[in-house]
Image 1 (spheres, rainbow, N blue to C red):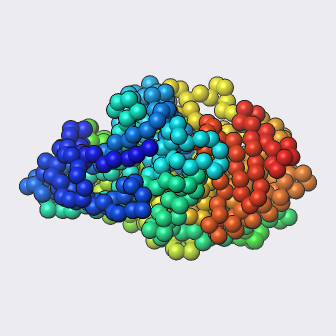
Image 2 (image 1 turned 180 degrees about the vertical axis):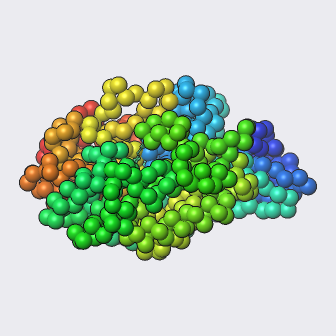
Image 3 (image 1 turned 120 degrees about the vertical axis):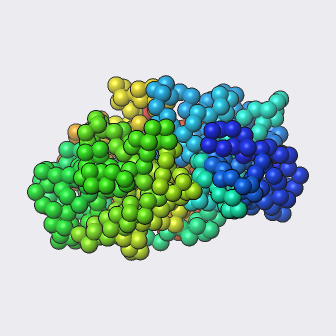
Length: 598
Ligand code: 9PG
């Protein structure tokens, strides 16, 4: 396979091409009013690596949608691409050019924001196009199956805090394709005379795919000052047993039973708040206030943890009533910009939430204050959820900021308030935006007390069935993103559920998922009513923690878990770490660890 730089192209907010120019090495290229400085780095291979920037050399502001370097791809078919998902819940898989299609084309609801949840660019992909966010791997017929196979090419952006990086692959002829390396600015306004630094891109080959990805993550983590040194996390989370219905009595009964369990963090999830957006006031299921709950958790010797969705707010929340100007607006009507639809939240518009404008100084001050207040209330562990919301296309107070900068500004504000020593867990987080600000990050969709999605729980024509709550979906991403652990953050594969009653997971699938979490080296949070757990569950957790700690230590020593069939199976089946190997039958959720059926 070969990658050959061919041309630069840029488009504006309307999707109109600003300019396209052939590329012949490093230099300055004019694309209409835009001037792109492109510098190829000399590498040991003949694979491209470059740094670049874009400036507005004209007299008028330009709203830049994207700037791309298009690479020609010469390959022997079929051509596979590792599609890396945009945010925590977005699915990662392997697709074949000409066979699979982009999930945006399967969204028949007409609601573009659904695509915005799972891609940097919320507009439809082209019909023949496959895309991957932040990083990708290409493998052609010359790349055999197997853990030691080489020949694949990995290409990735160095960072994603100032703008997203998207790879788009499409056929261009017989055994010829184009790979567009797109710096996605999302319509950010570039004023005359302003230069915007774009994140560098580099390609590599010569090693197994999983090693190439681990090398990339280490580079990105080092460049982005990733927060990778937090302690191994073991804890409890209220969500996957109680969901929205959690009460203070539920929290307290589990707290009372937690003394003999090896939990540090004890995290209250969604369901305590007066409204989405009104985080400091508890609802009538929680007679105590936040500080009182934290005191009770700390009194049992645990670190209080709290869930927040700080960048969205319910239409009927106090925060929106007090500060309607804090809500981002749509470009079309100037009305409030939707940030999420989740019917159980209600909120005055049947679960439609508004996105806060994280470019507005007052919103950032509010987020900083929120971080400080929850910390002062006693919560040292914060799970920040649905944080993709400010990345949606809309009108924002500061139109020069990109979607990535809007999300990052929100995280940075919460971090300023919460302090350097708070543990911040990203969730629903665009992965590239949060390197260097989160300590942990959810890397897959929600588990559920079942292996497969509910049969009556299809995705209503949204086009993203692999992101529906189901343990198999969390399993898929845990394998696909195992290489990130301790390079970009601590991976949160999502909770283990140990109960064997009040669940549709059979006991073998319970054990398999628990062992998957262990072998990933990632965070271990239990999400059961502890009253349902007996000695078997406790023994399983102890084994998971022991194995998880060992894999985590190896990950810190730059030996993260590997998924050796990442490009060979969909979903992959095999996770290896610390001399152990888990092979899972994804149809049943039953696994074999080191030859022993679970
Ligand atoms: C709380 C939960 C838990 C969970 C998070 C997140 O409507 N939705 O599309 C939707 C997606 C994800 C989701 C909930 C709803 O889960 O991942 O751990 O904190 O929020 O609401």
